[in-house]
Amino acid sequence: MDNQEKHPFLTDAFYAWDYETISVLNELISQKLHTTNDHYGSGEFLFLSVKDCPETREIVSRVISDIDQYQKAIEGMYWEPEKGSIGMLGLYEMHSKYFGARQTIMWHEESKSFMSCAAFYSDDDSEEEYDIESLL
Image 1 (tube, rainbow, N blue to C red):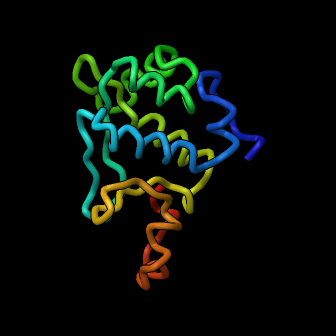
Image 2 (image 1 turned 120 degrees about the horizontal axis):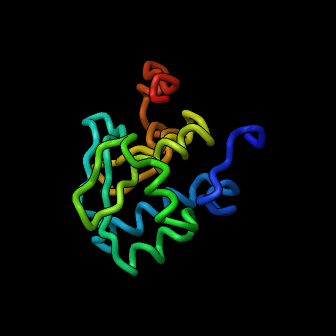
C-alpha cells in the first residue's frame, strides 16, 4: 500500500486506518449532515453528498485536511452535488483504491450504516459467489 499515490489533502489518519473513513461517513449520517445518500440494492456505493457547513468540515477533517483542495481535485470527475454540498464519491474511490476490494465501503440497509465489504459479507453465505474484485 505504501507504493500507491498519496493525495496531499488526505490526512495521515486516512492512510493509517481503513475504518477511519467509514467512521467519518457514519458520523455524517448519524448527525444528519448528508444531503444525498444513494447506493445500489446490493449495498455498493453510488453517491453521497454532505452539507458544506462547519460541523461537516470538522468531522471530515479527520480524513480530508483540505476540503477545498479535495473538491478542486475531484471537480468534473464525478457526479456533481448541489451547491452548498460536498460530494463524497471521490473519497470513496480513493479509499477503495488505497485499501482494496475487501475494504470497499458498502451501505448496510438494515443498520443504516456504512461498513467494509469484508464486514458486510461476514455473515452472508453468498460472499463466495460475489466477485469482490469487480467492485474496483
